[in-house]
Length: 258
Ligand SMILES: Nc1ncnc2c1ncn2[C@@H]1O[C@H](COP(=O)(O)OP(=O)(O)OP(=O)(O)O)[C@@H](O)[C@H]1O
Ligand SMILES: [Mg+2]
Image 1: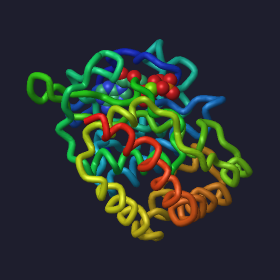
Image 2: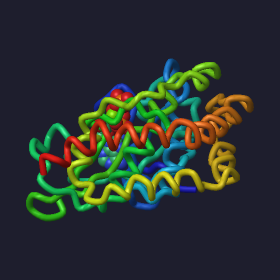
Image 3: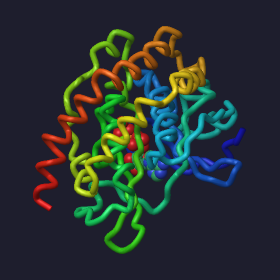
Image 4: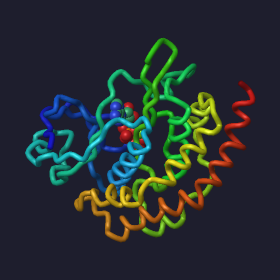
């Protein structure tokens, strides 16, 4: 298990995210469990596990154990000393967000990855794929590699309760970021390929990811079960229809301007 060695700074945003150096020599963005945002960390963890399996461009992440002595020695962490387990995402230096790059002229991610992000967000109901929740790394002049971050609001929101999972939106998401990605999806077939990848993720894997949620994050057994059954239901009953709609209403119109 890696240990925190140096506190760097608090990061922008409402998520209580802090930049901390760990004993492996790397900096991580650590999101602290906080009242009012009860499902943030479990959402992050489940989204990370699934995205990683799908080979989407998500920074490496892990659940870290922060000793009470560390948190109590940092004024910015006052009040959070009692939370041991937090979600940590490997810090990607030298990136800009989607607001800071005014004109994305090329993305080096392949079409299957970009289509995968769009389907993934619709599958897991991520309402928050804003321009701030992507990172863009300049690979070459005028060419960026896109990473996805901030999955605190999958399953509709950062503080969902059991009945909410039954009523997740079945509409297309409104995301300017999805539209930017769409411009660089060359093959329409990338969507169908990713649908198949999502539909064939082993149920056992989904259960294992959910089972690793620390007890401290207060996700009940019923809620864990419901997360998995929601994912199974949506990948079969909701996602194929949303994929068709996305291709017809967003992909085709945008690509015809090429
Ligand atoms: N892995 C990462 N590498 C580099 N920077 C990151 C990484 N993860 C997060 N950040 C930075 O930290 C900021 C906060 O992270 P994040 O978007 O996950 O939470 P938030 O913005 O506080 O949540 P919300 O969008 O719900 O307000 C991001 O806007 C981004 O600038
Ligand atoms: Mg954010």
